[in-house]
Image 1: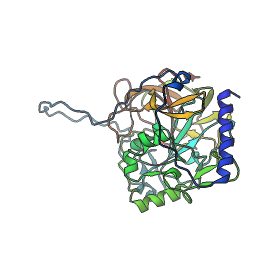
Image 2: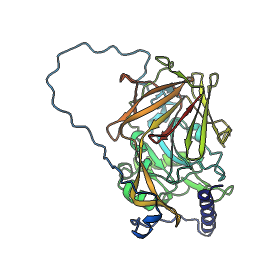
Image 3: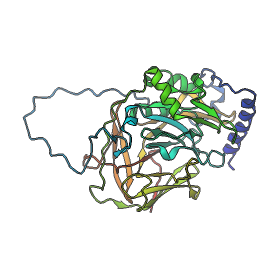
Image 4: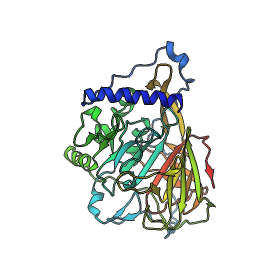
Length: 402
């Protein structure tokens, strides 16, 4: 076990003892900027490029000459009937579930720390996986919309990226807490917090929305009851159906990609493997799913034993920079800044679907905008109907495709 993981484990044990004495959540102290003395032991400081998102300024143009509208590609679905989930392109049994906001829930993923298998992830329409400040312990934000699992967890603390995900998916957000800097610089001033769409014990939300179990030690034993979050959002007037347009789907690829029956992505020392099963339908109504392995074994859901899966796995490359205004973690001799993952403007990505990989460009030019995916010619690159999983990677991250 690495020294960093030993440090993390000792912290978990200490936290377990303290939580046993007091079940009520505590509010973290306000963030303080790191003093000059300990900077010598920190990682090299890279000043972040913090670029606020705003609507682009368009130059005036001459009155266009009337031309025939382009013929839409009938193979691509971009508009959706009342009973079709716009996040999956799939028909739902009960259209009433679409009259609410999606719900984003933070989930931990730490190999060897009794958090696997996680609960409820197989019910999510989307999952966003990203690096944390330690580098080798990824974390997930799962987006639930069409399905309501009984519980989701182990629920963990928010990171800076969680100020972007509720804007992209127009969602509610639930997490166990957050560092003082993430709270003060990102969560508290966010639009979704002002709109009462944020839920956390740190902000006074507790049972029945959040609760702990006795089958693990804190902080790994906290869970979210999604039904109770949506119920509370109704009371706050924050659960109205948003505009979720922007995604495009097709049942078959529009052109041939490169073969990709298996691929691996890395988060520090951890490796996640996706393998294509052409007969599986666990990810959607159209056969063909990528199934997930972690540490060489199937990664499953604690609720139903189902192997985690996706019709689409999107490896998105985005700029990662340290926000040097505050420390996300302070282990004494190891001080770690929060990571700002700049999921705006545009960048490259790889789409894995139907046992093939397609290269393209992702873009997002306004805050409350769904991610857009296009091919090298600028045409829409449609997703396969079904569940999707995003692997957020650094610009230089390697990927092993087989």
